[in-house]
Image (cartoon, rainbow, N blue to C red):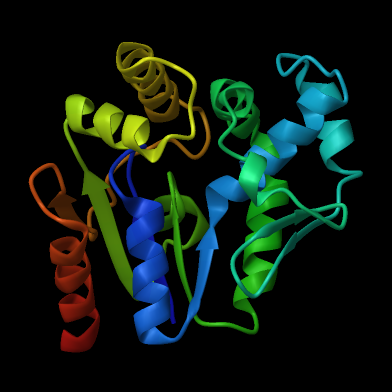
Length: 212
C-alpha cells in the first residue's frame, strides 16, 4: 500500500506522514530527505548547485540509505539532524529541479517500496513518483501559516519574515519545475491545514484510508 502526500513547506506533511505511518504500522518515507542529503553532500564538496552536471556526477557517487526509524543515511552517516540547516534549505530546490537527480531519488524510493507499505510525502509523490498510489492527499496552508510553523520548529536562524520570503521563493520554484513540479493531482484529496490541528488532519486521512 502507498499513501502519497504532496504540498508546499509548512503544511505539516512530515509530521502528519510520520503519525499516519506509526498508527497504520507502515514505513514513513520522506522524499525530501533524499534531495536534502544530496544537497548537503554537494555543498560540502564545494560544488556549485548551478553546475548541474557536477551535481549529477557527485550524486551518482553517494550511497543513500533509509533506516527503519525513517532517518536518511548518507555514505553510512546519519545526517537527519543536518537536513534542515539554512544552507541546505536555500539550495535544495535547484538541486531537486535537476531531472537526472529526480530519477536517482525516484529509483531509490521505489526500491524501498518493493518490500514495504509506505506513507510518503514530497512535492510530486501523487503526480510523478506514485501516480497509481491507492491514497493521494494534497496538504496546503496560507503563506503566513507556513512561515510561522517553520519558524516555530526552531531549525532555522532566519527571522520570521526571511523564512516567509524563502518559502515563497521555494514554492514558486517548485511549482514551475520542468520535471516534478508541485501541483494537485486530479484524484487527490485536497486539505487546507491552515486552521486545522495535526490531529484533525490525521483523522481526515486515516478515515479516508479505512473507508476504502
